[in-house]
Image (cartoon, rainbow, N blue to C red):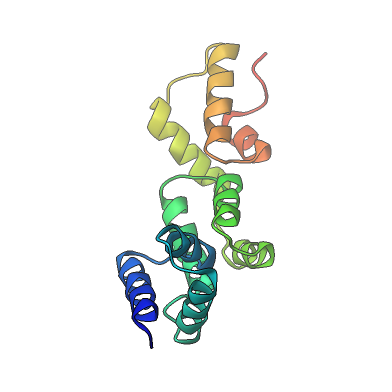
Length: 150
């Protein structure tokens, strides 16, 4: 192994020792540090073969972390795609892991608004926007705050 290969592998392991990364995320970080594309690709292949790098494991851990942080399915899927996780893997992950998104939306809403009443259309809209910004689907939001305030 050349000195540059050792440096690339060492940097990869250093990054992975702090937290899991997706393959694309690690590739971007290594390229940003000036390693060549060919070297980065070889290093990533080596790490995948040794199971130091695993997109499925990363996606699962990322999902649990974001779910426990109160983020909804739209936002989690979007962030996973941005980190280079394959759409099929994301879909299978969401199918395998059954969670009550409406219950999570209710918990997030109660934490933010302390169970205060919805007195007018502005309060309703504020809660709707808040939950949608957290990545919840419209149906999940409506199940928590009800139909539009009349």
